[in-house]
Length: 452
Ligand SMILES: [Zn+2]
Image (tube, rainbow, N blue to C red; front, side, top):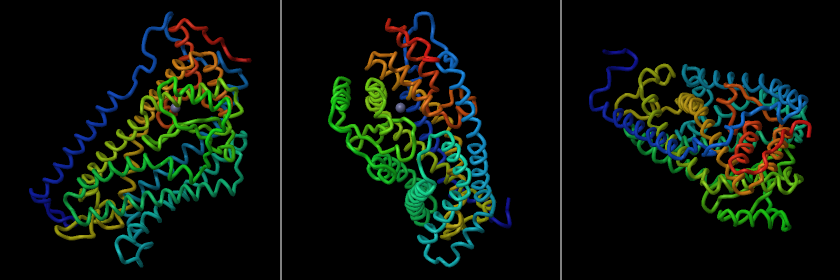
């Protein structure tokens, strides 16, 4: 069948790269599925619990006032979170899956002649536009955080953060798109193979370099000062058999009153970071949190996450090729199909950046709930590790209670909230696990914490 806009169906020879890309995508996504199936701790606390597993129950450990405050905070954050998400998706898809984005980029980059500059300009125009559209919703959320005393930032400092985060986005998108377009123009039929391999390397490099390149853009990190806490934490890491050179303290208090800690990087860039807000907590509670982070380090969670991310992004690139070389998709995006042997049209047209951004956003939106599901299991395993290491479920439960109250966590997230935002089990779920652990190990079961 012939189509006046796209020309005849591609000849049989042109179908070969599409079949190869489809096979590669299937193999890579099967790899993601296999690694996820094998590496995800689907049973974070294996074994039988005498009397059955404890049910998470906010009312057991949180006072009515704490529960009401958590609900009110959740209700205040819901409108900016959902409308911001919906508006953001609407704009990205509206620009990418209609000719609007191509037209916008056509106008804004009309004066730019060389393709690398046009691609960079397109990346900067689109990411800036999206950030600006998201800004009112983020400011709305920030105002809620401020009202509840969670944010310690001035509006000027907050805007500075937004600008810094936009700059990081520019750098990452510009580099990724320039590499992609170089391949796309050089190898119009098989660019996806090089792009998939390049994406694998890029995800790995970014994950490795993130703690030393990106994190310092936002925070200052100092080694935990010498003293009893430092000695105890390093001794605990040693006892755990996890080589930890240092525990770093981030100056998070200039932004937030929330308590947190994390592990990032792998190999020589791996680091355990605690928020300075945490340092005023009782020492056993800090140990409990660091023991959780040691669980991530011991199970190489960042490394596995990087491998899964790299495989997933590579598979996504093959899928991107299949969609972005489809005449129908290109026509919808207003960039037209590539004529055989012609460069700079179809997906190789810098105006197709809007389409690419929309396809990438669709991919990350679809994979988000899966990532959250896996993350919750990995976090639960790190909790189990903390309990095994400290053998102190009472302190663990008290610490989780303090964490939930201080961070005004959602104590009973609904299905949609779990799909979209919950990277960790809820506070009541984590406390219930401490009780399970105590029963399994015949330790003192943490008593109800409400009102203590
Ligand atoms: Zn964790």
